[in-house]
Image (cartoon, rainbow, N blue to C red):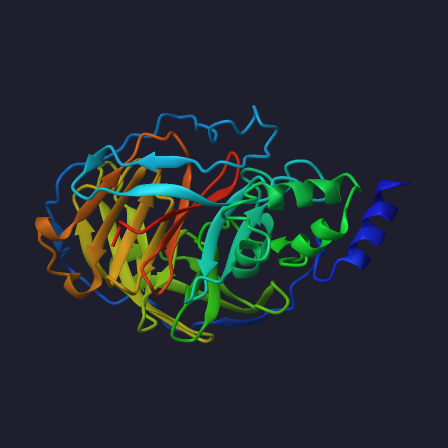
Length: 371
């Protein structure tokens, strides 16, 4: 059977499964005024140095290749440094193949529902690509019905692999029915998708722009899994010209946050503001003398502890939202690991359970000790 025919037949049999290119018809707004509050000084905290240097290469999940990607025993990582200990343990081994081998190999960001029963993951087609797609996972069904977090940890990968090889069984079809794959579109880097818990909307940074130049953020439809609104804006104020970070999160009140590196140092700046369909406004609220590590991967938020989590590879730093602008060194929590993995993002449910997204191969690891 020809490949395209096979895909068409399988897609018609599986509700919600598609991976086709689309030109997103997102309504576009261009903000007239600038989106940055003026500042003349930077409030900095001299936090402890737990900086983790990126090695230049990433490790794979243990036994990922030896078991032909079908892992069925959880990976466990325990922190090896910092002032806050934590342990991560695999909750879900995510798909690797889909219509072709390795198609789900580049997860970049994750957003999770408040109760932790649903997750949205943004992927890019290949490393460095600006084209990608979003996948919705019914985690509750995958966990409770198919044992994807316990007795059958390999079930998701086996089902998606069977789809790629045209060897679907009734059980695998049922597993894949809990996974909805959206169309491809211009995602940019893809590492910034986040859920605003106040509005229940998904947003991401498509283009960070240049210092003071136009940046682009988009709202993502949960139904179509493609952008439905685009906002263009400039972060300028007097002599201050800022580039929108390629990361984003929201707190419980709907305030938006992104972080950026300070050139020539190990410092990091945190910006707080708002994003809606027609305008945005940010202000610089804090600088850390020492960021988590070399790569600025993402920023997350936990409503249980009301803390921001700054993510780098093998390193997580958190700060209390209520003390931003007047942080003391003791307020800054740092947790480091020696996994060698790429830490894409960390998200939390309302109970405070954290989920770490990694690749090689893609998985979600769970922790209850970061808060």
